[in-house]
Amino acid sequence: EVQLVESGGGLVKPGESLRLSCAASGFTFSSDSMNWVRQAPGKGLEWVSSISGSSSYIYYAESMQGRFTISRDNAKNSLYLQMNSLRVEDTAVYYCARGSVATAGIHYWGQGTLVTVSS
Amino acid sequence: QSVLTQPPSASGTPGQRVTMSCSGSSSNIGNNYVYWYQQLPGTAPKLLIYTNNQRPSGVPDRFSGSKSGTSASLAISGLRSEDEADYYCAAWDDSLSDYVFGTGTKVTVL
Image 1 (cartoon, rainbow over the protein chains, first blue to last red):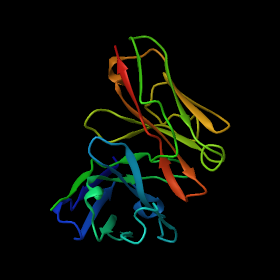
Image 2: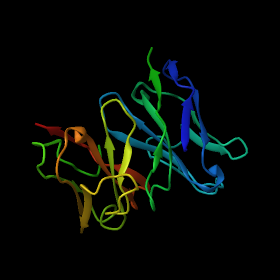
Image 3: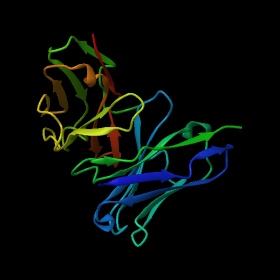
Image 4: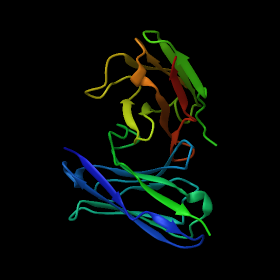
C-alpha cells in the first residue's frame, strides 16, 4: 500500500524558515517523480514544486522560485521542502504527492501538513 | 490567479448528469494532457481522470473526461450524494513551466 506521510509543519513568524519532510513507502521511491502541492485555507490547489526520481529535473512554481528548495533522499525514501523567507500568504496545507504531473498526473497524495505563518 | 477557469459551482439531483468545464489556452490544455481531481470535504485530493479521459482503477465509470481544443470537461452521470465535493482540472503550462490547477468547481447534490 502506498503511503505518504508529511511532517514538519507548524507555526512560524514571517521571514522564518521551515523544512517539510515526506516519508514514502509501498512503492519504488527512486523511480517516481514527487511533488509538493499546497492549499491555503478555504482556497484552491496550488502546485509548488516537482522533482524527478534521480533529482535530475526540478521545477518550481514561479511564486516560490528562489525561496523554496525541493530535494529527495532515495536511500531514505524521503522527500523534502525547505522553505525560507516565509510569508503570511504561504500559510497552507502542504501535500506530498507522487506522480509525473505533466505526463501521468498525481496518483497518490499524503494527508498534508499545515504551515501557518503569522506574527 | 489561475490560468484555468472553472465555474464556481454545479448542482444536480441524485441520478442526474452534471457537467463542468475547464477553460484554458494553447499553452496548457491546448498542448498538454488534462487531469481532474476530486476533493471531498476535509480530505486530500484524489485523481479522478488522467491524460484527458482515463480513469484510474477504482474510479467509477460514472466519471468521464473529454478535451476539445483549449477546453476540457468532466461529466458525472448518475449523480450520487457521495459525489458532493470540489473538482479541479489541471494541466502543464508550457509558457509558465508550471503545473496549473483550475479554480475549482463545487458540486452540490440537491
